[in-house]
Length: 340
Image 1 (cartoon, helix red, strand yellow):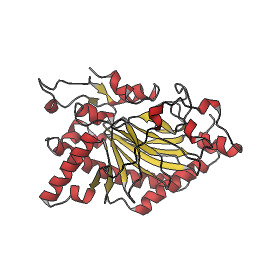
Image 2 (cartoon, one colour):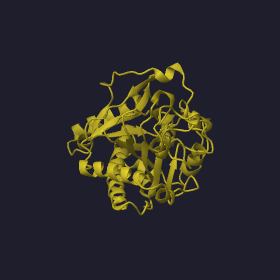
Image 3 (cartoon, helix red, strand yellow):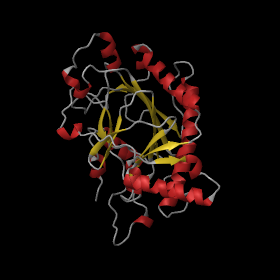
Image 4 (cartoon, one colour):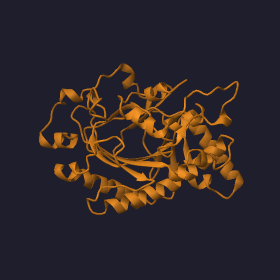
């Protein structure tokens, strides 16, 4: 395995190796910079003891999930110092020698710790301009033993992020007209899967020729994302790509495929992608929160009826992840495979 970081550091690159060049269409370059309408959810209001304040926030949360599948979360209570530390320890991991990093190169898709490059080297037709570290941090915590401080930082960050997501899931349950703990119980969130991914996107001499990650949706219920000072996330809304510039100290949240399945299409998973730049290395930290791996996910019976038939067939979370990760990453193709 040859990482992108090694590739960039081993040569004075003026061009991009041909195996990284992605086929792009004119639609891929259609950007919409009108970003003022991107929903923002205030976590303090969502968890407020004031019923009116909380009710308004739940309504806004439901609207964001229905209309965008994406929102920025402010006042979430995760300290800025911890968020910055996460980016730093992520950078420190990628700065280790190849031999040290390869100690953590898992072989199987569901290995609890996996260092790698691109998406899945067995199926990628073009390689993506990305190295990554994936750790399954819940229900059992896993993380590399080095560099120093990484495990402790990952553990604290994962724990705090999970608490934020649990509150968001309560709000989403209520926004659907369901009982507050509905998603928790039905998706077995107590023993749910939490996958932490640190992405490293080194600078590229010709960013328009490559992709950090192509257009795709995430598995799971919700993904929490933060990044260093360099942007690169773009979401698709009404057929156009919107570059995301996060509010200071905010989390970027997107709904995953299993939220779409559970809500029978009422809340849709958002198509998004990662682009790269010439200026410097972008680091992003994503945590995908999903059901327990053995949980069978299908549309909630309360959201299905004669005039609203089930749109997706039942599948375990584990089988869905394997289906997605063993095929090319391409928009919503995985969800389409289980559509009735």
